[in-house]
Each structure stands twice: as structure tokens, then as C-alpha cells.
Amino acid sequence: MRGNRHQALYQPLCRAAATPCPAYITQALIRFNIKRLQ
Image (cartoon, rainbow, N blue to C red; front, side, top):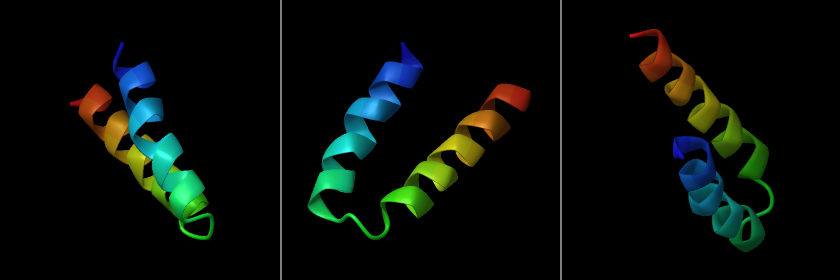
């Protein structure tokens, strides 16, 4: 469920701004992994 929610959040941002897209995905994945570990 959370994975789909993250995709829904960052996909529009990717389309709006293609350059920071990879960096944003990386940040989102890192934050998600940190929350998962804690």
C-alpha cells in the first residue's frame, strides 16, 4: 500500500521536473528504507 502511495506522489513530480526526478526517487527510497528499519 505504501509503495503505491509513494509512486503516486513522485510520478507527477517526475513529469513536472524531469531533472530532479532520480534524486527525489533516491531520497524517497532512502527514507522508506529508514522507516522500515526503525
